[in-house]
Length: 123
Image (cartoon, rainbow, N blue to C red; front, side, top):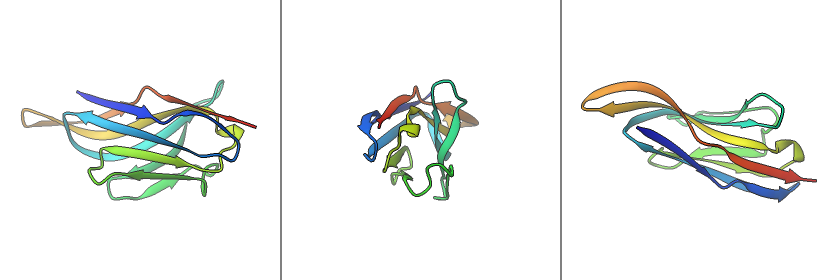
């Protein structure tokens, strides 16, 4: 009923920039928050950045000042602008959303994940 599709990953040299995007589609009534998680090889998944429907943002200390999370006016697309990339930013980046789904005037909360997009930063 809901799908998150990510794009924008790739390979870049240290100091470079990438912009990730995630589009939510389906029987969505509202989106309460959207997040970007990342998981480096051999490590646990960690929260990189989050944004609420009200526009409040939260960042991991390791990305503060370098990454910026934002949503579009419809709030169905979340982007992550990543600047001054470091080799330690190399990971698979996952989009996550807390949503309210609607179907036949019934509503239910749900959490959805994208398939992940690889970001590789070389030194």
